[in-house]
Length: 120
Image (cartoon, rainbow, N blue to C red; front, side, top):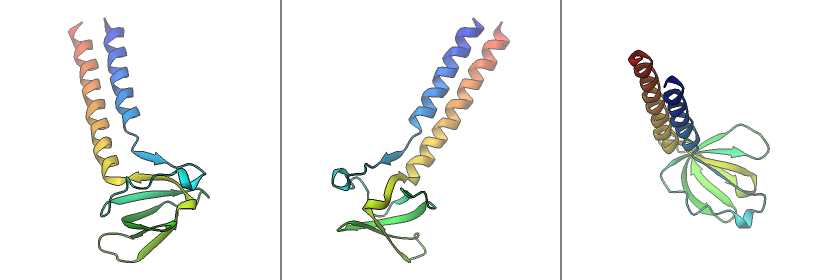
């Protein structure tokens, strides 16, 4: 009985971890990349292809081959990132919500395991 509850809780926890990915990957061919799913006014974390530091930006719009935004809501310093340099874009707010769901799911799985071990 213990093994089946442990297995179920492990599967539940791994499901939450797998679903926590809120990243959109982009290909080498810039013409195939769809940046239309980026929403103005949202904060994104942009990972560069060259491995340089990740850039946090408040997305504004797309101008030609560049993504334009600001450093943050309070800092209006303009950030311009060429599409060709982008490896991934992560929506920070979705990552927080999903991260919270993972923590809640892991706590629920732990509660199931603890209650099952006490029942025996």
